[in-house]
Image (cartoon, rainbow, N blue to C red):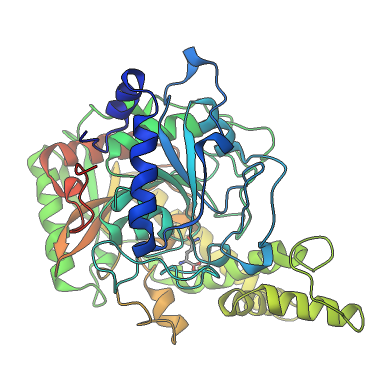
Length: 479
Ligand code: GLN
């Protein structure tokens, strides 16, 4: 049986051969995951069966993996941290619940950077994930397990979250498609919080078409998340056939800076000329404050994380140190033992920028610059329908290459973070190989206009084959 990655085909195949898709992917996880470490917890399909009434299940039988940041009832949820080792949630995240209702079957919880802080999956307490394109390279992060699993054909689709690039960057580095919807499009209920004003759930898949099928089920208002919007969810699958003809696409000049590898720039320019040949109009755009995205993010995200992670005190939540001598010792040791170095670094920075005397100089100033960055995007969207550029400055780097220098690691998100600060939807599609490693084209849309992203990405994928490229050694079809 040659099961391809297309969700509609899998759903149709499941209607004929019940359980075959599940067995096929579970077997691939068993055989191939040891090379990748993409899963923290493989899940027996019986453990978390689909719940929807048969007639309403638009994704009946579709195997899915969830980033281990979505809480799953009865199934361990670690967020990549020792702090939550042994935590078995008593409820499901909204995303999990909705995909269950749509007929998806959970087959695993994927590895991730600890509390979603990282760009390489190396901050996970459960060991790094390897990139299926080259096992000595990182898959990107923080949704690196989801990206590696989809790229290697261990699962057709997976969920992820994106606070500063964590869906788009690993999708780009693993050669798959990843969409971060607009802030507020998908409920954050049951997503373990990192930086609440930017965290957003999305999909990692082979193609825009697959992602559209899954996002259509995940999205929509949820009264349990006060930041989820009341807008109706458009039919993203219907949007796939709209095409790019007549669209004005702004090429973000700031992204073609000195940090971008020339060979990556070449792949992106080739991809843009495909869109131009398909009838899109390319327009140069400059976003004056975009260069401030990384510094602004690394004030705001740590500030929010220091507050969100205060709940893990060894009493109300999480790992508890043994034999404390007093309360301070209990707090200090529980948090020092439970959190890894990167999480501790972020909590320290966040506590500092929020402290009396520094709040105005750092936190408030960063909030103001955040508004300027969003205004730049809004201004650009007065004259274009989409923005485009590379997703990352380089292809996947080596394991260990950037771990000693957090600043170099932070700079890997330079093209993705502005979008989170502005709350916009964005997507990454495979745009070719550089030195045998995938690179991604990033498209950015107007607020709540995921449809135009899907339209452009599907048109591009109708004209290119990069999303069909499979990492050597992980080709599907032999199952
Ligand atoms: N790499 C960024 C960080 O470490 C973004 C992570 C994310 O999007 N969750 O904060």
